[in-house]
Image (cartoon, helix red, strand yellow):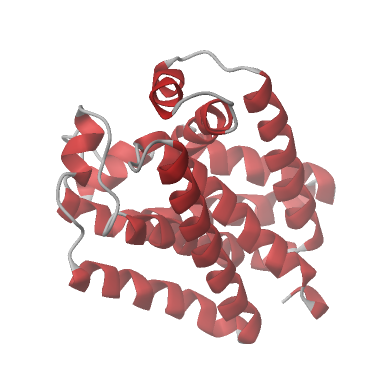
Length: 240
C-alpha cells in the first residue's frame, strides 16, 4: 500500500520503491483517497467561494495530489495513439517528454468535460463522487493488466511483469461497490461506465501499440474512465 501511494501520489507516506504487481491492487484505494481529499477540499471551498471557483480548485487538487502522473500519461497517449504512424513509432513518441498538438487538444477536451461535470454535481457530495470515479477508473485499468503484456522496461515494467492477483482485484471491486452503494443505481452506472471506458481505451491502445500496453496507456485509460464516470453522474436526474 505504501509503495502504491508513494508512486502514484504526492502524499507524505515516505519514500518507497516502485510498486510491484502485487502492489497495483491498491491503486483503486489510491484513487478513492485522492478523490475524497480533492472532493472534500472542493466542498470546503464551495462554502466560502463561488461555485465555479470551487470546482476549479477541486480539479486542481485532483491533478496535484497525483503529481499529474495519470494526466501526463493521457497527454503522451494523445500524441502517440492518434498519430498515423507505425506502432514502433508510437512507442517512441511515448518516450518523448514534449507534448504536441494532440496532447493540447486532448487536455483541453478532458479538462472541459471534467470541469463541466463537476460544476453540475452537488458540492456536498463531491468527496464521495470523486472517490467513486477515481476508484472505479483505476480498478478498471488494473483489471486490464490481467491480459495485456507490458511493452517497456524500467520501474513500471516491474509493476506489470506479473499479473495482479484475483483476490486483490476482488477487494478493489468491493471498494468500488461500497462507494457506489450510497448512490444507488446512479453509482452503479458510473462505475460500469468507468469500467467499460477503461477496457475500451486499454484494448484500443494495445492495438495501436502493436499488442502491448505501457504506463502512458494506462494513464490514458484512467483519465478517460474517470471523466466518463463524472459525466455519467452529472447526467443523472437529480445529480445524485
